[in-house]
Length: 604
Image 1 (cartoon, one colour):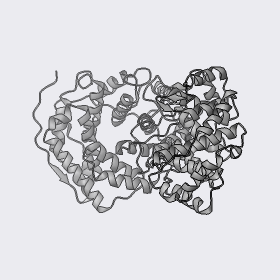
Image 2: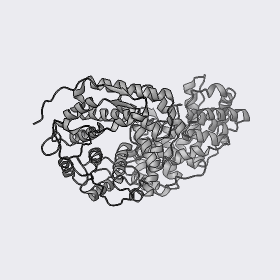
Image 3: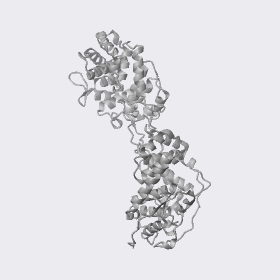
């Protein structure tokens, strides 16, 4: 039976100024004060040598680091969602097109071709983010053409494209005119009628009668795409009727280029303007300079570009920037090419870049992984990010994560930051102990209090002995005869960790045996990495190891994703969604704790 116990009195927190007396942080609590006296145990240190570098394998380490680097945003933090390695046809087309402009191909060209053919039968719909089916078909067919391939189901694709043609000869999708997209696709598939339809488009294309930015954008875009389609057919558009009329309108635009390419102009318009000036022979040195300066201003720290000027690189903006550079006789920088190649999926194709939302807690986990695996850490960017996040850190987990991120990255704390950490730690400890029952009843708050105690040790903030004894007494009231706490795995593990963080030096053979006996299929819980890491930490705090270490290592191997990172549990090892930084952090923590039991083993 769990006793009710006595209420924990208000805490006394000592701020230790003299580091010489900070050793009392780890002072053992007298065991005679405990409500329940646990059975003592002998700490073990028996474990087979484990070469963790061999266990993880170099290729996996490199792919994990690559995925982590993709998760860092321009502000220096790391995202709070996993970087998926699923390829999409939209991003694949734009990145392949960008590379083709400089006569390059994807590093994984053969796998990309195989992936494209694999998705033909459903017209690329399962791998497309485009709002209409025709867009996916266009991206797929043109990607294959750029790689000197043709679709295997040509006739079915042609039928599908033709189903979008209206009685007036236009192609519409979702109520929008997508004629140029359909005609390019049909020309790429050598559909004979597409040539005449493209000529009809040319002759129906007329400059706007009066200046309207939206109409100008539509005209410039249509002119460029129609010319490009005619070039695909080998037709000299300069010899066609109405060419001079169309050219005159473009010349007027070139004379007022600065106002057209204002900072808000989307990159696709910048690229099309550069393209039509190039193709009409109207590109002079002044126009080149204006376009080049525009592109220079829009380039991002990650090497990419954003089509609408956001702060992260993506496929469309990067393609249009490279297209504009090529049209004015320039080439992209090396970091832009690295930006593209770094987004190649191991399955073939390219991942879909997206805006990332950073989180200090996830940032800490990523910094830990990078440090553990020997990855590079941009300390300047990381420091800027941590400095910004510190000013709004108001919970234990965030505060602890920021502090340990500074320390792991080797970033020194100035006096003001050190005082801020110290004052916030005191504030949060006092806040917790105004309602002390939540510390010993809720695993979430137990974890937070453990982190505060750990942070307090590092900052010379010491909880008074009597208060620690009271908390330990309260926890021990939940200990059952079988050694568990409340017969609950999570609560038992947190109780053990908290007792030892309080300095109790809890080491009970029944508790060790109970935790060891909960191991299933190599891990704990489902099994899953969260439960497994928690139990390993509890066992480690008692100087114990799992009973079935070989089973545990097999479990870790079984959820190690082939393309980097770990998954939380079984089920998605060979899929696009396998792996995230949180699971990887937990797996490496487990391996680190296991290596502590084998002094001959180094993590890497």
